[in-house]
Amino acid sequence: MSALAKYFCQTGKQVGGYDNNIQFQMDNLTSVYERNSAAAYAAAADQILKANKVLFLGLRSAFSMAYHLHYTCDWLRDNTSVAADAGGAWPEKVLSLGNQDLLVVVSQAPYTRIVVENAQTAAARGVPVLAITDSELSPLARLATVSLFFRSSSSSFFHSQIGALALAERLMADVAERGALDVNARLIARREMLQKNRTYWEKPNTFRVPSAAARPAQ
Image (cartoon, rainbow, N blue to C red; front, side, top):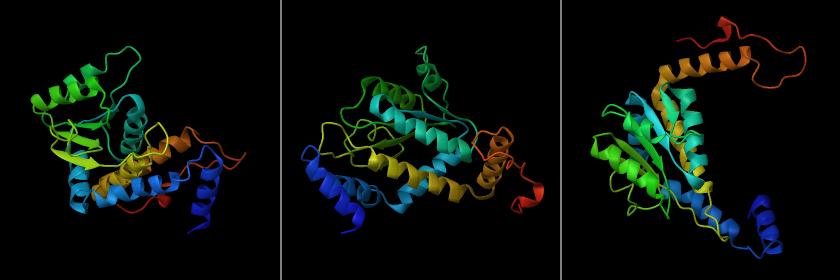
């Protein structure tokens, strides 16, 4: 057992008696490889790359994952958005999707009703749906064109997000790899924009605008 695993086991026994927590989390991590083939990840990545627009939908505890997927995907391609707004009009974003777009929906049991209903509406209108969910019996998996699965087992009351996060990272890695030169060009442009805007903290007097010579050849 690694030093990190021993640490979690020891602290798990000391805090709330959750000595099984490390095993739950390891199972959640391995589930994203055991339950999904390389072909399934490739199919999901291709859907994301080929769609005109990509909308990410997840509410309640799944919102963090939908936002994370949107944030990372927006680095890799344009025309992405997340179904959320303070005024509550986000279902109109779902209604704006067509059959050349893609709805990426994230949820786990107990499934949020309004998420399922909006996914059903999109699918009925011919919009391709990519489901990221916890079971083949999920109402989202049953209407999706492609599905990816994760486990969310936990020794506490709340679902674990580790499996879903690992799945999201694997999926976006596939998007980046399969997007090739187009993704590379967008990454360069995005990085330069953020550097010129000084988005991230830097030590004083170390800021440099990226030069064209530093860019990889296209």
